[in-house]
Image (tube, rainbow over the protein chains, first blue to last red):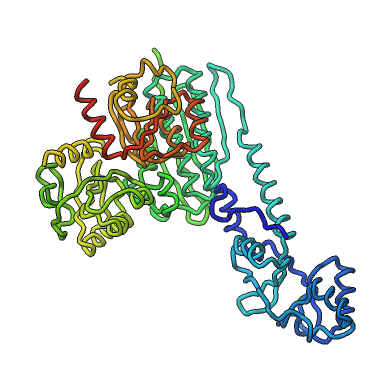
Length: 307
Length: 111
Length: 113
């Protein structure tokens, strides 16, 4: 059997985030078809054919306590060995490798690659059988998530820039840990401003504010939007995220204060300078944050209006 | 030149003073811990803006006797404590990594 | 200091030749691996010396108005980094030397000009 071709160490950040964020319980099949110890192998063979499955856990009456598993291979061996009419108890595989429902999906992928079994029973903290996970379940879950992601990507630019001389606005969706696309929103904003002949010093300040807020969303938030509005005499940039919220806003504005982990730091970010720097280049700056709900950072930079 | 001499010749602020006053073998400039771990050599002074307790852990691993923080970076208390435990000196300067590297290199090659 | 002088005097290779390569005049040098630090620099027209080889270095250079980036420790730029440098017209250089050593050499060059 071929392995699942996902490098669980060095894949793009989106995939790594995905396989750690999704838990085994989010992906597994919850309605498990089980059989008893005394069930004849012939009966299990019929169950497999009827339900289109390749493995049947052998459990107690409630289907909670697992004793073993009968796989398609066991059935083939029974047919060859002429004991297909015997009960499961004697011939089931007792050497069970199980997953816990709270483990990240990454574990399931590694297990499938490492042990070469087609399926793993899933137990909860009380060691009760709560599901079964196969490579098919994983493929379906990953495809669903990737589809959602592609949809989001397609919506990334909501409004195209308007004509020179008019007010303009841009809105970008920013995703957590998406370092591949990080900076694209700010680049878009900068491009629009160059087209409008904004003076270089102000342009630089606006670009820095936009980039800092964008990186802040990538590094610290659970994702959100960056909106940009070009008015007659001012530029407004607003970063709005879905959480997790800033516990202490004063602290977050202190230079050098950071909650970033080692991975983020190894990418050259998360040194605790982003928000203070965005504030430094702005004429107006405010943060509203609610734990568990999200944060809104607003900055305003005044444009030099020719007399 | 010894660790103790750095303060005067580079006009540094001494942040963590309980250190082993060893002979300085060279210098290394960087802010990525993985990079410092891979390239810095024993006895070198580390010039960085990464004011974090993990920087002390890497310094201790490599055998760096002194950390020189550039750009007046604020130093968290847990970093100072970690350095005290490891007997690693911490200095601070308002100069950039670029300027400090040039000055230290010039000094060390004149000794 | 001319960017051309840097390429001439410092052992390095030119990975991407940026916009107006022959005319670029550098006012100063910023050596850092933390782009959030580079973004706080008040100056522009400086050379970024870094061991970080990701796209964000080029994005940062573009935003602060730094015309060139020098990668140290013989690090190879990631693919996206080269593509973005070409797109933004930013010169990308690579040297086998460390930041520490290259800062000293650049400092000598700056003083001489």
